[in-house]
Image (cartoon, rainbow, N blue to C red; front, top):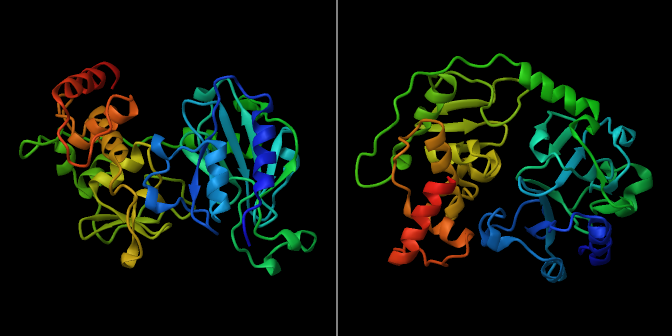
Length: 356
């Protein structure tokens, strides 16, 4: 089966019909027949991997799928209803897409209050995704066993299709379905851990101390000392069992996603730049972490570490982080490992000091 390009174009037409003037959808490549980003291009959050609608169509012509994300600086909010008890009636009427299972629903909205609407995960009922999280775009196809799909939808099993053909509605936090608002309130009311004593780590050489942060350091800073026999609730996402994370052989293991993290990977997730699944190294060597070759991961991990006291405020910015800033701000496109030209170097340092 191939993606349905006309379905994708229909979705984009409604998405942009009454969109804010400055809104440009964050579209990016997913692998063919998959919900996973196309790994050969690096992180989907890198600006260079953001697609125009025409570029997305060209990718679909090759059999690829398309993802769409709500980012912290845009107005898009996606409400992803999932699980066995999906009830679309809880959604404020808006542009919706039916997922490949033919039971899940993605509701697309715009908001003027992005700062008031967080990402809200649940264990079984879906998620609110609006800051650096994505869903699969209409028109995409992911193989799905028709026997698992309600009878009336079996002819379209695996496809993502536009359901409610109308422009996105505008919402506030209070317009979110009650189940998500309650979940967020539950998380807010959870007892906050006592602050841990921590002295910023000083670099052991002429480099950023970021690269000296270990997984054990992250565990000590976030949850307190843990032994290899302990399991606890994830520091990255909600957990029903409160027993899906452990530390062993110097790595932080997530048993929900079956991945491991070193210190840098863990800080990348905590920064919000990547998810646990994206940044983690799959167990049994079945794949690679997506932080490999991604300068943005280094930058955001460094920034998080600096802002949260892992490293000193005057810690030197890593070269890869400088490359990220140079490219993000349109100053220069460096080659891997290249030292920045002096004028660019000075501009990057100024931006880092003034903005970050």
